[in-house]
Amino acid sequence: MSDIAFLKSKLGVYPGFPKEGIVFLDVFPLLADPSSFETLITHFLHHVTSVTLPKLRETQGPDAKIHSVVGLDARGFLFGPILAQRLQAGFVPVRKAGKLPGKCLSASYEKEYGVDSFEMQEGSIKSGSNVLIIDDLIATGGSASAAGQLVEKCGAQVIENLFVIEIEFLKGKDALKGDTYSIIKD
Image 1 (spheres, helix red, strand yellow):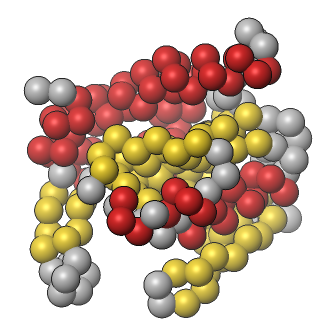
Image 2 (image 1 turned 90 degrees about the vertical axis):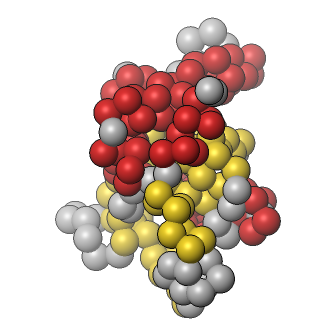
């Protein structure tokens, strides 16, 4: 069984949640099983080291690297720090407005039921840095797009957006800067 088939088999599936007509794919069972969680992190790491970094080094030279991994509130916080550590990069959280101390940068995005804002602490990413953005799921792309705006406000570059699950028919990746990689496409 491939990594992708294995991970997909471990997802929780909840028809009619949070409302009728939606099938909710839950990543928490992947975290509950150490083998699944290791497979997930290793899959992301393999993708970044075998696809993303070689492509980056073609344009930036042989020493190019990922400097920061940005995790979106809240499930990006589960995968981002581990991936960052394995890449020897920093981890930077992007949180909902009002949750971070100190001076923050802000970006708004539209959700299916209104407008929300994300914040990042000012100075958490250095200008010129290469950044990965990570989250559990991409639907419309609004929250990941806002995170990308925050990265750009720091003078840094989004190299790639990483997701465990992509809801393809919503075309959320079209709203994002940088490449996009999703392990499971639904």
